[in-house]
Amino acid sequence: MNLTATHINYQQICKRKLWLFANGINMEHTSDMVYDGKLLHETSYPQRAERYEEMLISAEYEGVSLFGQIDYFDARNNTVHETKRSDKVEEAHSRQLKFYLWLLELNGVEEATGLLEYPKLRKTDEVFLDDKDREQLKKSVSEIKTLIESDTCPPAINAKICKSCSYFDFCYSGE
Ligand code: SF4
Image (cartoon, rainbow, N blue to C red; front, side):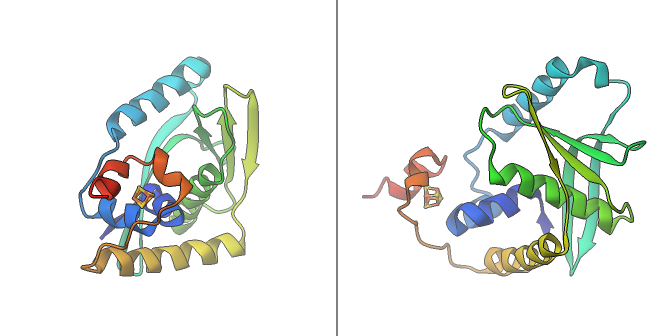
């Protein structure tokens, strides 16, 4: 089973969303979003192209294959850079970055620092991984595994967030 930061994020938002995504029902234009993010990074920080490296990283944890695509890793300063197009700071962003820091740690790269960059806000937040985060990530992986392996799709949650969810029509078109 493969797991990425998207799974971790969806788990926090809605179990049904996670189940649908993990079972191949995907409404997001992921490739466009990845392209947008890359473009944003290149236009906001053009001087980085040569000094920093984009990095694919993976690790195994309790039979689950974990994957991450790190925007830029500055090996000299042991720092992971993640650039967000958003004009709003969100908990999901630091959760994603902590997942990457954990993946690095599972690969023997310890005490890396995360930098969350918001070019539109002209703001950078530092992100660190602590014991509580590690425990939370381990728990998430195990809960996600159980949920994904279930044959039953969890019910719709009827929450405010549904209105901006890509699965809205899928979840509520029968009502
Ligand atoms: S529309 Fe609501 S219930 Fe359906 S997947 Fe999205 S968040 Fe979950």
